[in-house]
Image: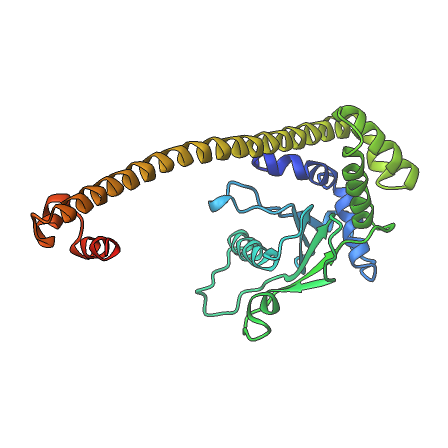
Length: 300
């Protein structure tokens, strides 16, 4: 699989690592389709998109089964309402590659043969989410002639997807109790084995999983600390800027008011002398004639 960005790789590398084992891919398919008893592990071809695609288009897992079915699975720790659109992009790119590999063209006079698509997302967060999400309903309120429908796995149960959800939630819970990534990873694995989450995988790959999870822990911790420091910097900068702006504005307003008051006093004195017309007093002081009239009226 092509190299992905550090942030995305750290969030999903346990998922990606688990499904780099074809045994787990086969098990996932059988759980999705228990009725397909004839399928064998050699009938499955992984077609996951890598970040080498234009605009870094990639997903977490897709596979082809007997040239009949494409399953696109994406793991999400935070809910994203744009999943149907992203799945549409994945599906279009996967079909494009499939046509290239099978030497078919959309410009052919005969209809191309395509595997039937099946779309899934595994959501590991705790926000309430629907069982299925639709492109048509999400963006167009059911009024679009185009649609893709994505099934959402979000429950903790005995299935491979359900166990992965449980594993992720245990890790998120333990992050709140530990400052050391390795200790957090070890405790997460201990609890997961105790609860029966991904027991076989964690037993085989425990050292690798601890290393991966400690990286995730450290990256998340550093990101949180950075966000906190930026927030505090923003507050301090805001206070300093506010004080500076207040002083500057006060000085400017004070000078302006002072000048106006000085001119008004000069105008009053000239009015009392009665040597100049109001028009000439306005010219001398720079005050508008309306202001001179107001001052004259107030003097009685």
